[in-house]
Amino acid sequence: MAGSSVSIRVEAEIYPTESSEKVVEAVRKIFPRLGLQVRWLNDSAVVEGWGEGLEILENLKKLLKERRIRAAARNILKSSIEGDQVIFYLNKQAAYAGKASFTEPFVESPLPPIKVTVKSNEIDKVIEWLTKY
Image (cartoon, rainbow, N blue to C red; front, top):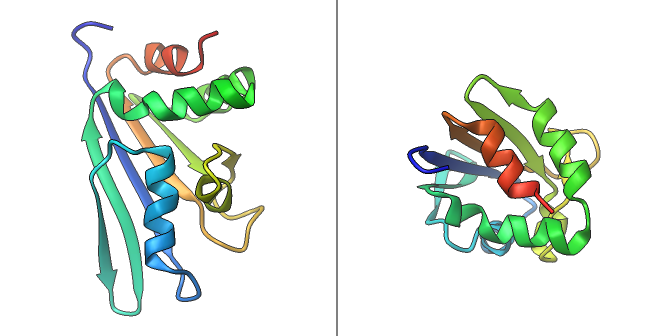
């Protein structure tokens, strides 16, 4: 994928019942190379991180391989492509346990998920790299 740029943005809303440190830790367990910050908005907060390059996705790739969910991940990611980006959601509790588990925006869990946006002019190739055997 020489010549293609990849940018990653991660957002995780922090509910008042959650510890901001634990949410940061959950995101860091999936994306250890991403710079993170907590942004406060009145009574709520969001953990945000963004960066450039496939190396930010290396740990996610490793976790997908370990859990043997690459084929399912590929299907989810391919169905989530919007133009030059893919938007997907990871379960926050699973992330805190160091596992990658895909979820819907607010269906399965009482806590909001981690929203991940990956943008690239070769998004299909990025998905293939992330989920290849």
